[in-house]
Image (cartoon, rainbow, N blue to C red; front, side, top):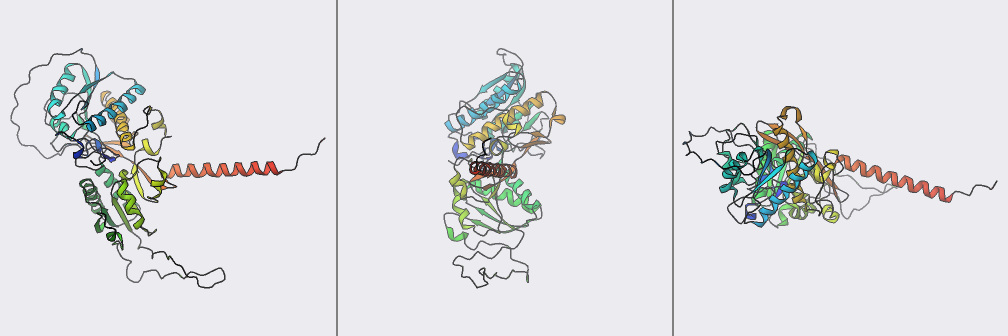
Length: 449
């Protein structure tokens, strides 16, 4: 089973692979976490705008009897799935959703649990409306979202937590998630903004890695970048030696520097640094945390910028593992990278800490509730972009797009530029305080009066 990324995610994306589901349902990829084919709850991709063939009228559905009707927010999740993994994902999303509901205190939340969303979603959707739902959130799986997208009875604001290839003709159906492929595209945008133009892609041959590589390459080319090479790493470290990069323009190669001592004598360096790589080169690492730790030491040239997605980041608890990823740049959500951010601090964490991939799903649940509340109150124009715990959220047609936070590995941690500055300032203040304390302790006593 591959980790759900999101991917974030990520994810990552929802970061879940098709193999994670023992049934025909495909879990949403998260986080963080990984870019799997089912990267469902991972990004927010709205259905394609390709015109559909003229549908055959479906037989009229029998009316449903209301069950304790009252205005509420309906949450449709596969909590009864035969896949314990998928059921656990759904449970964590529910926890994040109810945590946000407790903070904002709007309409009550009513949960509709299914065992197979592809089969149950239409009945549950109709039942929620019969019971008085004002806005509906879900389903979570890709199959469930595909089924709902084909349903002509979307009559109230609805937020699907996955992607669908089915054309969407419902004006009130929206999509939100954490696709890892979206993160790969955003990494391409960040690298292009840094004036990098030549990319070497390193993938691992897995389905999720291929999807990340393809998404990055597609966006990179749209931005005018060039793909120098794609290297596939399958435990063969030879492919990482002499990594293909774009050469220096003819006549501009730097001359090797001569190392000299303080007295001007030549020095022999047993481990000379590799020659600098031509400006504009970068490497994109389409790999998960464990594979990236194996690959990173072989990318030893300090002049080669290395970029990746949130699949590399497994939190700051294991600093030793993070040291292996020194200076790799990546993106992830504020929930994991900026715990002291005001938009993050107001929402409670679970009593028992979750693994990073699960934390991403929990954060997805929080922002899903916030978006549902915006849809319910018809405040889309005035409330977006939203400073979400999963990133800065905007709306493109019926897709809620998430912009994660840029970060890098340093000091054994995944840090943003702001958190690194705060750490350095705290260290400097502590050093100065210790110095002043030492000076005060060594001062001669004041003469007695």
